[in-house]
Image 1: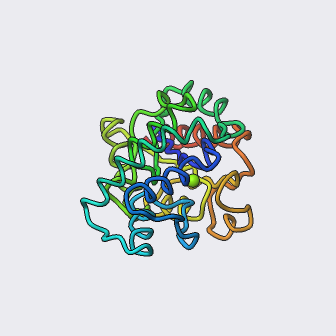
Image 2: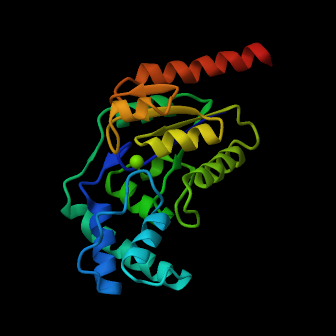
Length: 232
Ligand SMILES: [Mg+2]
């Protein structure tokens, strides 16, 4: 089984700022933060890491209780925010998912910094929720490499142990680094948080301007299939 793990923001969809708006609204409502700091990076990072950084910068105790209050409020705000923002499913994504789902030896999962329910809200809003059977999420972990390990373990379990290869597709340097950390084939796509030049420096296995090049991705998946046959 070949497992293809997708990042969400900047890779599958761009939400038009719905996520960041929901963060800001939750911090305003819960902690009276009028404007969240611009000194915290969002792209490619886990919701938990972003929230803890913001708490630190705005004098909010980064306790488990505050994190849980934040998540509940953030999810409510995300539901309000998603339809208000002008987002979209990114170019080539639906065709790519269709193509991958047409291959018997491929399973699709998520590798995202979103909390699990946040991922469900975002993908539900863009009619992509039923495409992914498992994943690693940003609920418990702050480090993307740790999320990658969880996603790979979930992929292994979903394949009932028959997992030959893993591909990670994402739009930031963090996505490439976490792919490399679990020995996955790293696909970087410049539709979100980083430029082609920034992504190139991390040495991804495949670097794309967008996900319209279905052929390049399928070639890797199918080549892997042939390698398996050859060595089995
Ligand atoms: Mg992303």
